[in-house]
Amino acid sequence: MKIWIEDTPETLAAEVAAYIAGYIRRHPGALMCFAAGDTPLQMLARLVQMQAQGEVDLASARYVGLDEWQGIGYETKGSCCQVMRDCFYTPAAIPEERMLLWNGKAEEPQAECARVDAWIERCGGIGLALLGVGMNGHIGFNEPGAPVQPACQVVALDAVTATVGRKYFGGAECPSHGMTIGLPRLLQADEAMLMATGAKKAPVMRKALCEPVSAETPASQLQRHPKLTVCLDRAVWENL
Ligand code: F6R
Image 1 (cartoon, helix red, strand yellow):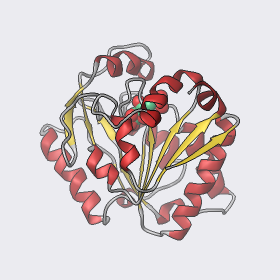
Image 2 (tube, protein in one colour):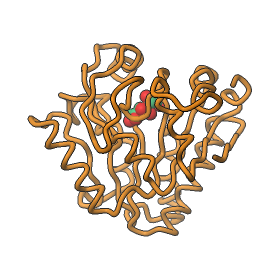
Image 3 (spheres, helix red, strand yellow):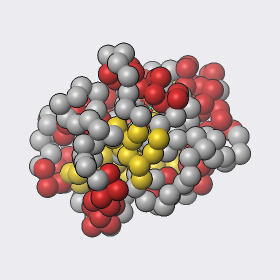
């Protein structure tokens, strides 16, 4: 595991974007899996800016959504697909055929999971996964203590996820279930990056990095990834 520390969220976003752009240049066609949520937003904006400056061709990669709230779609502000489309796929002009976003409104969620799995298979697995961590240690919607499924899965959301998640929906209640790429699949990615900023993420990052791997802190399972880079701002690092 490598730990990468930058002074501020802004400098961290710029450095992580530069690294990811380099990965995309070195691996044309690779499948990128980016978490939605607040943490990667500046990094995604920086990637779009780098493309505008001719530094990377983002459409040379392929993309898959990490997770989605069940029962909502693009029209709901705060859905993962709305965030990713508006903040990244549209400004980066990624062609539809290069990406797969979860359909949170799929009538058969298991079939939706199979559709996402099939896309990952077709792309030869995930090249680089850029992950965020929930206040309860979740990764994607791999929730604390939930049974670990090898592939994509439907999950009942943890109480902390439901409470914290209100921030994405203007304070309104969150869906009770989500769909996510499972941890084993993420552990098979060629590279994983776990990004966390702000002192409030320090306690959960301490559990993830400094305590033994446990089902109660799904992020700790990333310790098993052979090529993990943990990307922190100084506020997390100094409060670990
Ligand atoms: C979102 C996702 C979640 C978030 C996590 C942190 O697609 O996968 O696991 O990464 O909840 O969210 P923020 O970045 O908003 O603190």
